[in-house]
Length: 228
View (tube, one colour):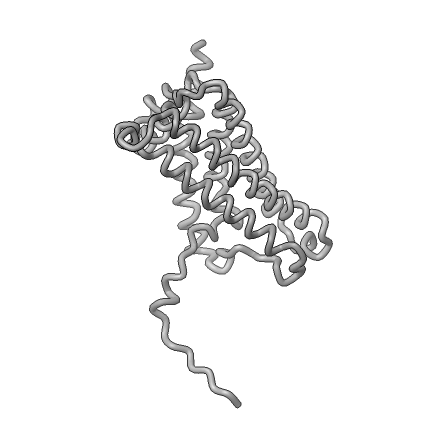
């Protein structure tokens, strides 16, 4: 029992801070030392067949999923109870998460298939490109499976515990965060663990383009283009 408790504290009370630290420091070092590697490495020019549909489905799905997770996990229960109950919030998360999760899954499978089976795209693919797509696929499947697990407790209790975990991590209360995850089901724990692992590998993959904002574009000098 003690070993289980220690493992739970390590995975959900300490590991989040390790992942977040590597995320920030690793991203900073990469941007400072290898600025030209800070890009999405798009393969659209190599073969556009099916790329736009796959990319749009994936990005639309992932944007709404991330936004839902951000609001759902970090908004305290005392605030959202003025607008919606925990049970209704969970139902909303299941329906919206399921819809956008399926969109994202379809797009991701198409992108992964293209990356693996298109000779031109495969030739320029790094091992990290394939790894991050597979990791995203695993995380997405785990997320969709949590919807079925949530059907066994529609009172929103698990959503509350996951919210307490996320908010405790943000407020630097690792012990409280780990305690909130003790009674949470295995599928949720796997989903959280893989999500943290994605933060850990973030600085070393093409995922860095997610936090790229073209700020310099708005303050750069005008480019003068003349016809010959």
